[in-house]
Each structure stands twice: as C-alpha cells, then as structure tokens.
Image 1 (cartoon, rainbow, N blue to C red):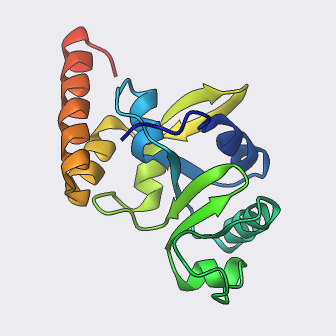
Image 2: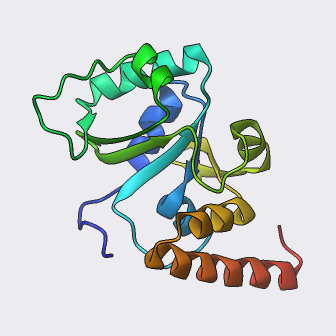
Length: 168
C-alpha cells in the first residue's frame, strides 16, 4: 500500500514525545525504522495504561482534533482518560494524519516487556522507542493479513541479516 505523498510520521512522534507520553512505535513506521521497504500511511503506537499517561494522550489527541476513524461524525465519544481506560485499541484521524493507539496489539508481549525490549532511535532530536524486530514480527504474524505476513517475512530477513553481521 503506497503511503500518502505528504505522510510524515515525525511530527506525530515529536508531539507525543514532547507531551511526555509513554509509548513504543509499532507497525509500519517501526518496520521502516528497522529498514523495511513497505510503506505505511499511519502511525501505530503501543502505550502505557497508567492514568497519568492516559491523561497526557487524551489531552494531546484533543489538541490534534482527533476523531474516531471510520465512525459517524455524530457518534458521541468523549476523548478523555476514562474513555481510553474503558477501551484499549483506538484508531483516530487527526490534524497530523491517522494515528492508532493500541494498548493490546495482537502478538505483542505486555507493554512493560515491549518497552524494555524496544530500540531507541532519534526523531527530530528526540529519543523514541521502536518495537524490536522480534516483537514486530510476532505482531505482523498475529495480524495475519496478507500484507502483514509479507512484512513479517521481510522483517525476518532483516533480522537474519543483522544476526549474521553480529549486530543487535
């Protein structure tokens, strides 16, 4: 799936980092950071369910004029920490593009382990955590869609190349 021409995940990562949100980048953006050639048009984030973090996320999403993606515009939805606490996985359209926040991504370990195993990268001068290749592969395989299985295969090849070079 080709990315939208103006899709840029960096502003999303900067805003979430600057807001003090505890998150790990997953999905296609994380895959791209590991070297995947597969394009994406959204930012997928796993996140801590701590109340303070939910408050930071909901405040930031309101600043970004977030609305539930695919839902009728008149659907009542209160974007606050309590609503995020009641759910877990949400897909939003925002002023910065599509953002999916996933407390329970299929195939992922519990958040604390996902965060512990994440790799740090730099995004516009900020340190951002991206999911490890092993966790990304497991999530792509668990998603099971043909495009995810192709991405998992590519990520497995990248992992093998890194292992053969003695990298991490």
